[in-house]
Image (cartoon, rainbow, N blue to C red; front, side):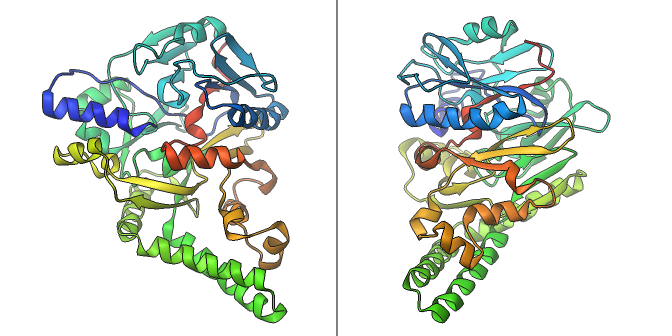
Length: 399
């Protein structure tokens, strides 16, 4: 994630033409059997360790390990005694590390102080490979096709940074499906599952669900003379107004519609989900302004302050092909006053809304929301979510 890094690269290339290559960064796979996931300690503190422990408790039941690289080595599954502290490691493991299926780790340091990749390769008994070619982290997914080979979904804005032959070569001539980017990275907008099923955030579906929940709350509040439920209805209405008043709301609807069409054209089964709530940050930083003046794509210069993003998730496929889905928790239920009791009465919470949209694909009990306030802080302040923290280790990666 860390948009400023990519803004710096873009500005340097466009203005100074000082760099022939950019730093590489990676994203993940569609839903596959996982052997583990790896995070890196960069000083997020106790809330980060709590998140890791919570995640491990879910995944260990599936035979999946959770690893943390610290300055003292790599820790597995028990993070109760870890003191998270600054290490110089790049926080977003998804951006810089990929466990390839030929027993190779592909990595790229973001700076001279971002070290330790050789220690990862040593721990997992794999070969370490690096590259100077850049593909922005979070901006592509590997997709398993029926013939067993991988294709690639890639955000279109990459072609404003690299020429098509370079991109094709980077992916070893795999088939590339380029798609519209509603946001900085496509892993903030889509989440591939298995069998070419793919989740796509749908702003219109979200508004419809919110309006229905507000109406139910108003009817119940009047019937029971319940001021708490009435306040919930008012806050949901205010949230709807904030979303619809956003100067990018109509553009978002248009972009997601185009994105769905592109995916359907390429034989994906699009599953619309009400997964994201965010409003644009209209105050451009110096880097964003400079990049915009020099032709940077909107996805790079337009920040979204998320209050909820359930699509930025880790997904594990079981042997029976059923899925385990883990996303970062949102504060919205608490902020709006939706207690478990009120959620039951009005048949609505943000987590329940998302689970219901996936009922034909993932069992509700297999969808988990973790991290309490920690993940909310990450995505609001740093443009990075739960998926961004981890590098996935596929089961057929031998270690």
